[in-house]
Length: 132
Image (cartoon, rainbow, N blue to C red):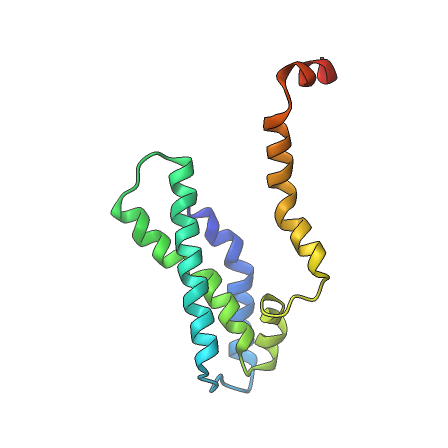
């Protein structure tokens, strides 16, 4: 579970460096960015808990608390896309307004689950025939 910190470390460091070197402070307290923050935090926390449940049959209060705090990491990344600091906004705005075509994002999200599903559906005889 602590490997997740390594995933978010570059983004957190970029956020800290941009905040330190930037000249504008984030004074924008709009309701939309707080709602987005809460939604992402809740979804990320549930995702971390469900991921742990899939990997392990039991769950404890420590795991729930850890997932609660780990859910803050993606929420902070998305929340930073609303920053008034231009450096921070440049780094994280793609979380709010993706730059690529919508179909590419759908492909990226569905690619691995599709491959796993096809692997489950293939009969073992066909796999044995193909790979000997």
